[in-house]
Image (cartoon, rainbow, N blue to C red):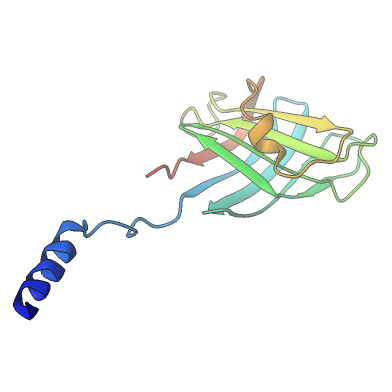
Length: 151
């Protein structure tokens, strides 16, 4: 009976695909810097490895203080991304900032787009619920890069 048990063990081992569990964590990222039309200067960088999201963002409307954001959420779909987190500085009472971006080609062409959004309600991982509004401001100077790491 022992030889049969060994054969069964080998058959079971061969039946399990080598790739089972081998896929790494989902890795998305987005980065960018420049001007949203003449409306605001921005810079951001965010990445997700599995469920871990890290990043920073900031923006400044001319004549106002720069606002910094600790990025807590990131959603990516193709060439579009939504990133967000709480602002470190007061910006008209906003408690959560979402930034929608769209990567449409090379730098400085006005093809990339961005839209900052502000919420008076604190949120965690609000990117999933409110992802992918249509970015309306052209990136007139600078560039946006989005990488969708969907396996």
